[in-house]
Every structure is written in structure tokens, then in C-alpha cells.
Amino acid sequence: MAPTPPVPLAERLRPRTLAEVVGQAHLLSPGMPLRLAFESGRPHSCILWGPPGVGKTTLARLMAQAFDAQFIAISAVLGGVKDIRDAVERAEAARHGLHPQPTLVFVDEVHRFNKAQQDAFLPHVESGLFTFVGATTENPSFEVNAALLSRATVYVLQPLAEADLQALIDRAQETGEVPALAPAARQRLVAYADGDARRLLNTLETLAVTARAQGRAEVDEAWLLATLGERLRRYDKGGDQFYDTISALHKSVRGSDPDAALYWFVRMLDGGVDPRYVARRLVRMATEDVGLADPRALRLALDAAETYERLGSPEGELALAQAVVYLAVAPKSNAVYTAYKAARTLVARDGTRAVPLHLRNAPTALMRQLDHGRGYRYAHDEPDAFAAGERYFPDGMAEPRFYEPVPRGLELRIGEKLAELRRRNAEARAAAAGAPPVGK
Image 1 (cartoon, helix red, strand yellow):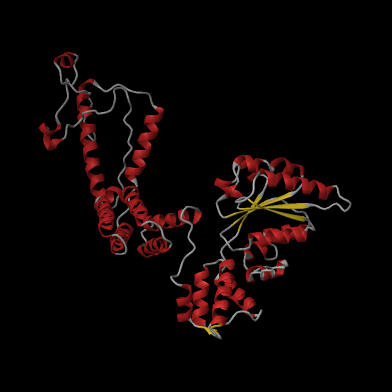
Image 2: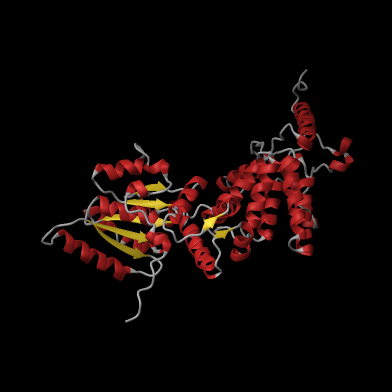
């Protein structure tokens, strides 16, 4: 008979009671939402949303235990509709058995189920056949059907704090299976775990096996780094963490904080993001948030992207860092971005107005006979190359004002120039209409 494989350290240290849970104080402290749900004695369907290794499965098991419910686990990665049908049958049997018992169905990685599979839970959740608990690392607003989401409370779990991870190391060492850790090694291990309890405990177990094999009683930082190899960060290149981080970078640039912008930029590189993606986003920031307040920003962002293409990593990343800092300290204006959106909105809801005759092209004699281009004033032949009073919008259309320069950077000068040109337009139009000049 084959020997039973040893139970992993992470499983052996899995909390058996709510008091043993490490972290999530914002949900589990006295008076907090999830703690109240446990104490209510009435289970309810919920979604546990958070990164890996923060206790989603543990909390689901503890819920079943607290409510004396049958626990049925389904993996959305491996399971399907058949597993859902089996869960329904087991829940029916438990409800109508000799000793009736409620059922809690736990679906891990619920975002991996498609719409039809998620919909299969709805009638049974509504009928109260079982309590549904879904776990997801992705934003349920996007990944869970609205119908199912409306029937479940969403609890957001956070990565474990440093103090929580330190407490887990202490708990692991109490088993006598984990070697002593020098302070620097302990700190490095906590950073390596990056808020993930499972990652921390699995790494500890690996270190313990290796240390015993080498007869090492204590783990120091140098040996830890040599054993772990290159330090890795938990970074989901396609999920919420990815988009949250680029959002933080963008908002730091917009908020003119070069230090925070550099921090998020390096976080993205450290997590393995393609620097070309960051380069594209920097170009977007240059047009959306700096705009004409400093037109050089766009050119610098494009130059940084080109420099990276020529040099690659790591040398080209310095050019991107330079662009990040420049964009952060540059004067800010979203006036062009706002004007562009306003123009798109107007055109989308407005009719297709004809181009005025004086603005039409007249390359042929027939077009000239039809008055195409008649009366057009060539701006370069006018004083200051400006045809004061000329109209460029369709006939009969009120002239909207999309672009309003901000009083910063180059746009301060642009605003002054536009104000003067608009004043001259108003005077010329008033004179053409026989009215007294503006301001007279």
C-alpha cells in the first residue's frame, strides 16, 4: 500500500475557527460586516473578492461549520454544469434526509464559469436550497452575472499585512518544522510573500526541506536569496491588479507627483509588464492630461517610446522614466480632451449640416458657377493673417465653444490670443450688421 502523501503545511495551518483567522480585520473584527453575518445564525449568499492566499476558501469552510451546513466545493476551473447538478442533488438529499441539514456550495474562481453556468445557480439560490459562496480574484462587477451578483453580498478581502504574515511565520515555527530565521531573512520572506499567506507557507515549507537536507539550523538572508532565486512579485498582468496599477500611475502623473508616478512605474516593470504598454499609456497621458499646456510633452513621450524600441531593457526603461517624471511635473490641461469629447457628442446628436458655399472646394468651372467658394476670405491676405468676422460653422448653426484653454503653461498665452481674436470677430460682425462696435 502506497504511503499517504504528507499534508502541506498551508493546509495543516488552515484556521479551524474564526478566532484563528489572520487578517481581514475590516470584515471580521467585532461589529464588522462578515463577523455579524457569522454571529447572525442565518447564512446568506456572498461573493468573496480578493487576491490569492488571503483566506477566501477558509472563510467559506468556516461559514459552513458555523451554520452546521454540508460543504460542497466546486472548482470553476475544472468543473461544469454536471458538478452543479450533482451539488443540487446532494443539497436536496441533505434537506430531506433523516437529519435535515442546510448546504453551502462554494465555487472557487467563480469568474471562470460562463453566463449559462452562473445562471444555473439562480433558481436554487432563490429557493433557498443552498447558500452560494463564490470566490474570485477578479472584479465581480465585470466577471459575475448581474442576476447572480444581485442575490449575493460582495465582501472585499485585502492582501495580508506585514504583521499578519509575521504572525503566520510564528505559527509555522511553533510546529517545530521550520528553521529559525535571521531578522533580515524574515523580512525578505515577508516581502516575497507579498500579502499571500499560501505563498508564504509554501515557501517556508520548501526552505525547511532544503535547510534540513543541508543541515542548516538557521536561514540567513544570503542563503534565502540563493535558494529562492530571482525575487518574484505577484502581479496579474491581465486582471484587476494590472489595471489598478496603471490607474495609479496615470493618476499620479495627473496629480503632478513625480515620486509616486515613478513608484507605480517601477512597480509595473517589477511585475513583468511590457514596457511598450507603459510607453503607449505615457503618450495617452501627454495628450489627455498635459495637452497644449506643454506640447513638448507629447514629443518627449514619443521619443521615449522610440528610445525604448532601439535600446530595449533595461537601458530603454530610463527614457520611459524620464518621460514619467516630465509628464508629472509638466503643467496640466485636459482642455483639448474635453473639447474633443464635446465635439463628438454634438456631432453624434446633430444632423448632417451642409458645408456653407463659401467654404466649399471649387476645382471646376461648374462648381464656381454654383458659387462654391464665392466670398471666401483668404486669411493670409488679411491683417495679421486673420479674417475678422468670417464664419466657419454651417449656416444657421449657433457657434459652440468646445475649446477653453486653461490658465497654465502655454495655454495661458493661447487663451489670451483666442480672447483677442474673438473680440475682433465680434467687432467685425457687429460692424457688418450695422450695430455699434463692441464695447462702444
